[in-house]
Every structure is written in C-alpha cells, then in structure tokens.
Length: 49
Image (cartoon, rainbow, N blue to C red):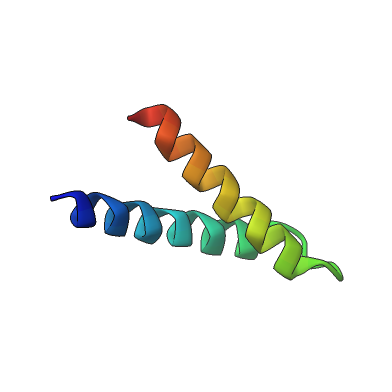
C-alpha cells in the first residue's frame, strides 16, 4: 500500500516535470528547471494529501 503511494508520487512528479520541461522555454539550465519542476510536483502532491 505504502509502496504504491510512493510509486504514484514518483510517476506524477515525473509527468509534471516532463510537462514543464516541454512547456517552459528551453534555456541553458533545463536540467535545473526539470529538478525544480519535479520538486514543485512533489511538494504539490504532499499538500494534496
């Protein structure tokens, strides 16, 4: 049960990061933006639950 929740967190965070990666303008620090996007996704998820 708990592993499924963590897995769902990771999947959704990855999807959010991918979405932000393709919608944000590509500049030199895209890996940084990808990290920020996934961090935002995870914090948003923890606020949700």
